[in-house]
Image 1 (cartoon, rainbow, N blue to C red):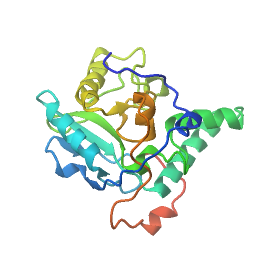
Image 2: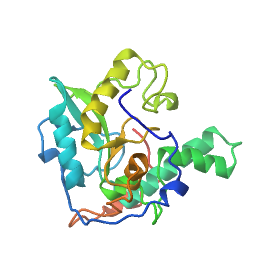
Image 3: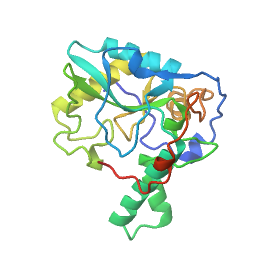
Image 4: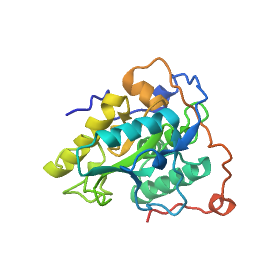
Length: 237
């Protein structure tokens, strides 16, 4: 497999040890860089931004151009506003708590933190830094391909990049993405095959870098939608 990972677990306790030396790089619209990058269909009930740090966006553009003929990158989300991150974390917490009422608070926290980052000043959620993005492979017509077969997309057992039991086709789609991104220094969070980043604490942890170069930020001139800020809980659609 083309991806080398230290572990499926990236606990906040370990990420907290990684210093952030903010480089101050701005964000740009990743859709403007390559015709082979598209925005995936909406998965959530909020407006998604199309911003990433410049170096991340440029790497994603280069990766898109490195894909075999007939493929494109479908970006689900890049930078995510803090209030949306809080809503998403709470929604995932609610879902796991509902499904596992016997779990302790500590166990529930560990599980939820695998799939959504809590708001934390020392360990900002990756999507709030402009360093992370969720993506899938699409065909030349923009149709997102099946990365989870024979499982349904929301089956947790298929979330890990190297999940056992995947169809040969699903494995190939994941590997095509990895082969385009990894040579450019973009790394995968191994518990979520769709989540990639460059420059954040997760990237530093996976790659053994001395420090992260991106902390929490906001696009220039960005203002939150007050109606979105009060919607709770977040629902996946």
